[in-house]
Length: 282
Image (cartoon, rainbow, N blue to C red; front, top):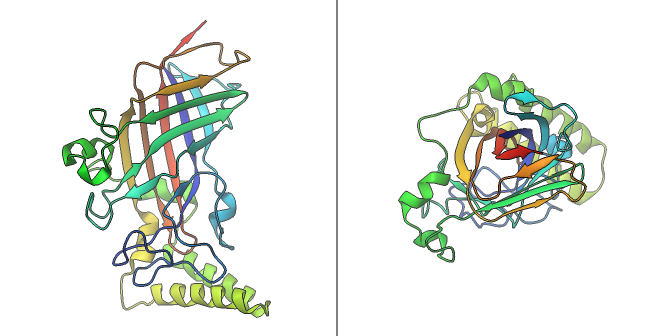
């Protein structure tokens, strides 16, 4: 088994309750688009963020392969080390305000994974309902959806999220962000940029109110665990035989990862996990 460990920041510009899930600007929830930005679209981007906010981890967005092992033995010079992980076809966290999944139980759909690096490309799509691939999401039986939802009863350790993101003091992190935004505000005369910065500053200020426990602060230490097997059509491109073996495309590819450490100001979070691929060296 070839095991690929991946991690990095991702972007997801999503509306939050009580806004509808397809709200384009953010009106009543605790996330929003600011002046000069494109509309919210809920798309999970592991590479190439849209309208990244500065300062913030938007400039760091990029989930990559950190390590590769074969049957438990590290392969230091593997061609996929440093490779990019992408989710294709505009994937989203699907809940639709409780119609198909409740808050914190949203599944990612579509789930079409691609790993590229060193002249190698691995691609595989998981079919939500193999019995009826064309069925609309809201028509799929909840028992079928459960396989792709976050693992019930398991949580990511806050210490691991802090180690991954570097955020140890949630309130202090947001306070420093507010200070930097205020500095930027003083240094610009552009009315659009001013409006965008002021909106972010006001939101950060509100979230730091000591009289209440705010989700925008606490969510920085929360993560959701996903664990399932990718079992749909697979494609392997290795024209230069860099892998030195054969990848199994009929057996499922087990994947386990968490997504968390949410930065509600930057609309970014952290992803860490591993993909396992059946492999036979030649």
